[in-house]
Image (cartoon, rainbow, N blue to C red; front, side, top):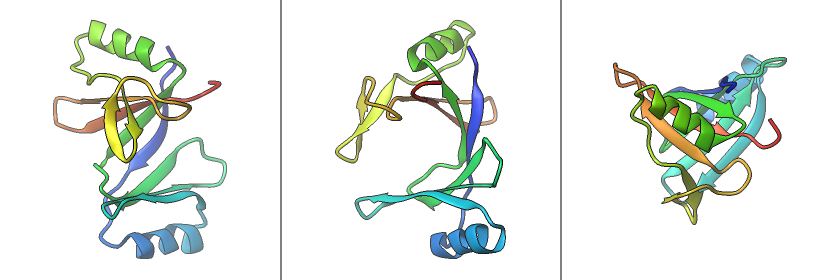
Length: 126
């Protein structure tokens, strides 16, 4: 199974100020800026030529995100190695639900021994 580091979620104190810094001063491309309700905002920015993005926003947990071709197979592989991974989940109507979702909407999560958060997302066509 190939695991590709695709997103690093970093904490920021002011989302708009950080977005402006990364996009206008550093030159990162703004890939996504979306909200769900009043408590969640996701801004994903990618350095030119990079396969890995940074994500800032509200309602996010700092951590790292891997992408895989098959979330179920990746989860089974990690659980088989002793990783305590969550169930497969997806977002529906602004809330997490059990089971796979549509394209880009199938995830599972785990923590390393120091409590660092990892998300694994199924990437279509990988």
